Length: 403
Image (cartoon, helix red, strand yellow):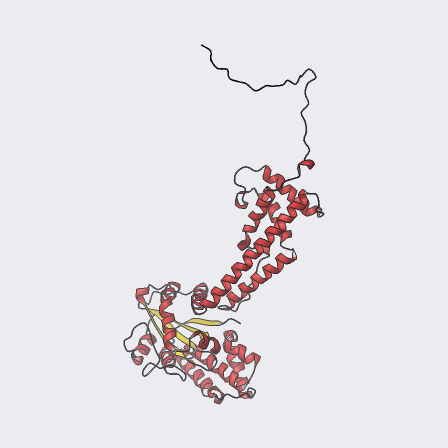
């Protein structure tokens, strides 16, 4: 599971019928006794909780990606069931209730850190009138986007994201990114947030919209980008450590590959190598490069020469030490992706990974430098005609001019 969860959707203007349905649904799931359970109970979840969770998960299958769902799945206590129920209701309040109620819920729910009478904040230090903002959002003729950004409790405390000021500063640093991804000019963008200090997963709610109702469009790629900028900021120091270690692993792999190819070329040149296929590939590449004009780097080579280099790299990548180093590099890459995505990162084979393109040029340079011992080189003397007489050519001496 990822370390940071971001869910995003837009709030449609509802008809009287849909508002009524949402209102009834809200009452149905909000008045169940188990919803309000907050004790630190270690007992297993109740039958009522299980039944309600099944209904909620069927209605909102995306909830299975929440951190709270992972907690409940690993440890199905009454406390974790209560947390999951509450967060499903909270994150889908925009669907099961109307806009006005949703803004009020953001600002007033239990656990919100209030700034005066409520918990709403934006970039301004001026007081926010909750009723006025709720009406504005409810009656806005265009789309309004909602985002939830969530952390694990231990990460929030460790990184200082256990208060609304820190979250507000984070949003303000990246509001231009949100505007760009939502296709709203920054001058027209309006936003409000609220920090909810819940037991297991502190999080913020954000609502975003444009003063121009015709503006605004958010794609899946845009949501991924918003998630990425938040994650890279929150986990900056830890990611920097991973980047540094990954650079070391990459350089180590290149160095190990160079040593391997150097030894390989030396053995072939000295006729001490016994892998006929690889030896033939090396010698073929040597011949191809010797007959190649222009820059002898991978990007400039003819397709048939590139094919020989690729095949050598493919065989090289199967060498034990090199393959182990690549796996270490991949593991660090997985750690990076884990900070902001739940998808499993898939990696190409080493010889197909563009990050390690320099290894190809290293192979080329090593083969170009390949030297055969002089005694093994066959020198063909030219045939001379029978009447040819070798003559000694003395050095020419300039004579001093005489008077």
